[in-house]
Length: 164
Ligand SMILES: Cc1cc2nc3c(=O)[nH]c(=O)nc-3n(C[C@H](O)[C@H](O)[C@H](O)COP(=O)(O)O)c2cc1C
Image (cartoon, rainbow, N blue to C red; front, side):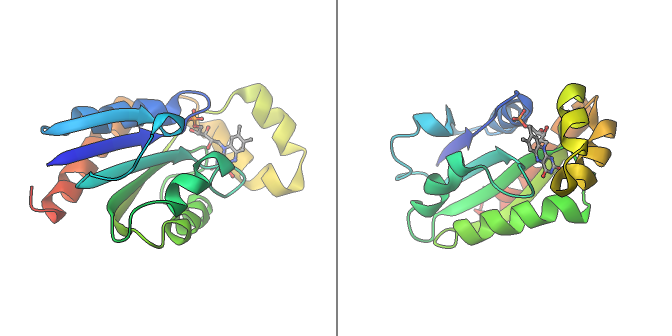
């Protein structure tokens, strides 16, 4: 069994979750920034993480999703400023599933991640960002230890699906 945990992170929130996920795997594993992955071949499971940006998936991770091997088992994780389980982050997750259509998506997971208050102030002035930016004001202490513990529980769920 071999796992890859790979992520894109601009301000460290998604990296924190990636590290928690990596720590919860107890067999051969690698942790790599998405820009450092040379090949996505040869893994039994790939956990792929990204921050939600503008209700979608950052361009930096598009080609990774599109170039996954056929039927590759993957699990998606993300961080976002908006409320967990709400409709706003769902759009981005749906988009990621679409990009990874060649792969076999075993599950998805998202938690909140803080946004610099100055960035929120600026984005609140823009109509297309206002909805999530308003919600993101409440994400200031995220990801919390409880969020990261949920991430580890997510790993267990996914690994059970591949018979581990
Ligand atoms: C330019 C920009 C756009 C963002 N767009 C969204 C968004 O549409 N919805 C959302 O919930 N959070 C949004 N966020 C908040 C980030 O998803 C959140 O802070 C995330 O945890 C950042 O992860 P990172 O630290 O790994 O980069 C945005 C943040 C930035 C800077």
